[in-house]
Length: 233
Length: 233
Image (cartoon, rainbow over all chains, first blue to last red; front, side, top):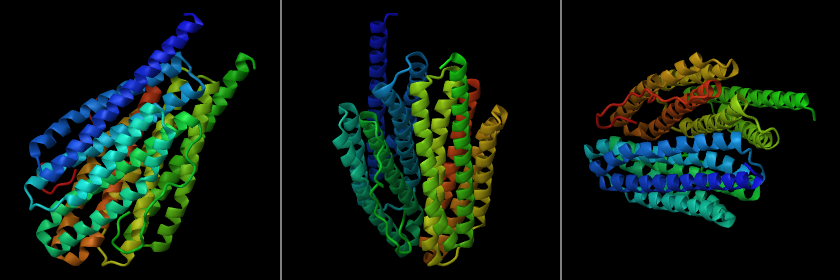
């Protein structure tokens, strides 16, 4: 192949990589949104679909991994191309875990259906916040927008604050009525899953920044932490 | 540089990469072990040290990332060398998260110290199991031992089974005495952290296998799941 042909092949493969990440991101965000709705509405049929569909995300992650190994071996990209390849590998891993968290939320719906109903507005609010962060960081990836990525990174402290309030609310229900304990522990884990998705969105924001600027995020990520006994971390 | 010199440079850098992963693995396993002991003994001073030391693991992860990008850009490794570079990048990410889980366990000790004591033998047993898996997979990495890695991969089902029994035990305490609820929720999250460490050990096992054989793990990972309401996932 001539030099020009090789460059064209690299561009095509980078495009294919970006397309895979975007598709994976869309699926992961869709699964997450559906899982939050299924938990809030205690919708068992929807939850089963979410558990089933998780494998599509896993399949794309394997495709990304294979494409990355192939590109590194055959095209030996450098500079910003290399950073995009490395960042895509890491972002795929984060998105796969977002899918896992959505699946874990969905699996809890079958148990919740057989237990007393717990008000889940806090979960709903936290879910919307985290979903908005995830969608925003995926847009930052597509549009190669560092400022947008940095803004997502800074919003993680909000998620921690909402998580703390959801945690306290669920503890209160459990203490007031022991019959709610099992359902509340499931919702505690749903809240924890959402908090982890917020962490993955900030990881992706860091990768988008690295991909575009070549410099890793250095400031300590903003966090809300309290020292009261019984507060979550 | 002559061809021979380049090969020597590649070998030296691969050695440095392996040395970093081994050091990171040793630190992560040490932090995990200390965090389990701190939770079981409710040892606040030990817990503070664990939280402080987590940054050492993060620092090595950044070194690994930088070394990987440098090697891919300058040495353009192929075949088994390339697989080792990619696997090391992913293993570093898993070890960083193991460190995070140890730190999260440790952070809960300050809260546990102000709450009623809960028997934590289940946590202790689960912790030993997960720690043994992690140490075993690190040995598999160092000795490039596929069989050892596969054996770790197969043990993840045991962790899920112990997790389920710990979860049920903690639910029972909470239902019997509402004053234990806050402490028990902290221990539930410690158990969840340990379960996640088991997942990271199996991820590392898959990377060791890929690194040595070039083929990804294809069989569905063994899992214990039950359909009773109130059982964890």
